[in-house]
Image (cartoon, rainbow, N blue to C red; front, side, top):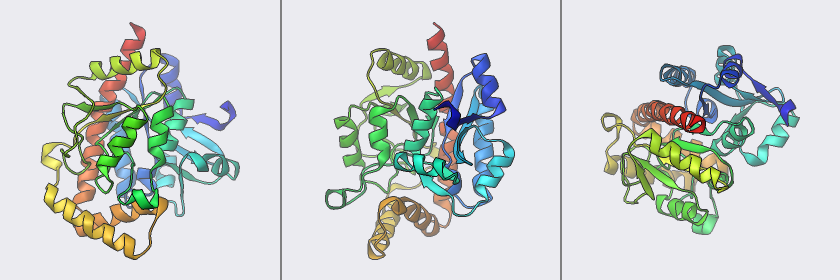
Length: 306
């Protein structure tokens, strides 16, 4: 297994000195935003993590290796490359064996972070149960990964293009705790609130870190969702965004878009229909998640020492 992992110099130093590390996915770079905004945002998010006291580890597949932490040159190359494969659990073996460029989804990033011993992962929003899944069975692999891989995912809730109610039901069935960070309801990515209550509320990073430590000390396998609402000033109006999502869903159905193509199509369509407001919101929430995720990573490292 070790022969497939390659660490950046910054991450290697952090591991040697015991500094907290925060994992970051790469799908948001290759499939979530246009160039050069994707690379700019990735650099800014990494810098937020550094400024708040931890080390960023952006994860990607490059030349037959799982890269745990990217150099600035690799980040630029990755963000500006065409035809980057979207890598989930099922794709990792093939993409590494064939030495293709692969952007890790939430599920794949969790797997790779776990292999590297990184327990805290920051992203935008998790995948989930797609609308209409009762007939299509379209359910993100993110949920299965959360059920079995010991990595906490700090996010702004489930993407609002999904069926949030069914996503919560699925997580409950799999025993995945959903913790609201300073909130009693699950945030819906672009908006701070949904109608669905979370399992537990935490108002400080220490509470989250202690919960994770006890959960894993007890041998309770699987991750946790740490749902951190988008800042108030950056949130979109609920009625406005829901109307646009319905319009984008209708077009996706008319064009027979399915499987892993749904999310990038939907996010792109929502961006166009909101005249870029959704992209601005996406960037703002990822940055906010990086701040909170870093605080949790530091608290988790401290709980390990005590």
